Image (cartoon, rainbow, N blue to C red; front, side):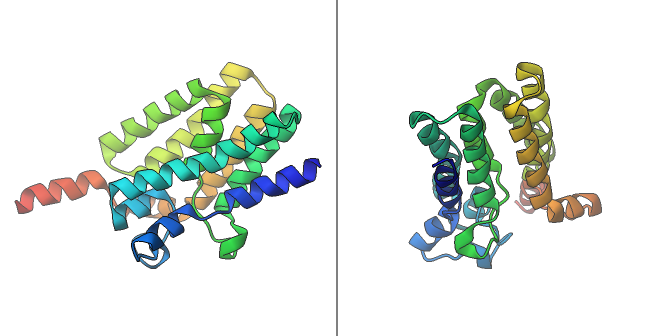
Length: 201
């Protein structure tokens, strides 16, 4: 039974909501922009409202399997593994040949369920770096690093901490192209776009 709930969590995590939302308006998000199925690329291609819808749905993928496992009376370890399986499903979805998103929104759902304080601190770092430099990818990377540290301080070494390390590792792994562009100075920045638009105006 433990294995079945974990497999179900992975399958739920594999649902490509960004792709499905884009198709509702006739856009294949894998064919333009960053070609990613996450909320950032959906926002870029079809607008903020559908980007927010994608963000909420991807976050729900992380929380719902954990809520389900907890409601069915599974141990805290199985609940954590379900969160990790859903996250892994988003990053490596069965339905898309294991080519998925970067996991940030799904991680948000997982840790909103587990530790709201860690999410608040992570979001503060995310918003701060994006506002300062304009790089969503950098904000995501910094938040992914901060979350395990906050959880370590809040909970000590344990199941939640190991899940946070697992999530942070794969968020960084899935952002490897962004890291390369950040180091090369070619990553897209919302702040630079606004500055260039202001000059054109």
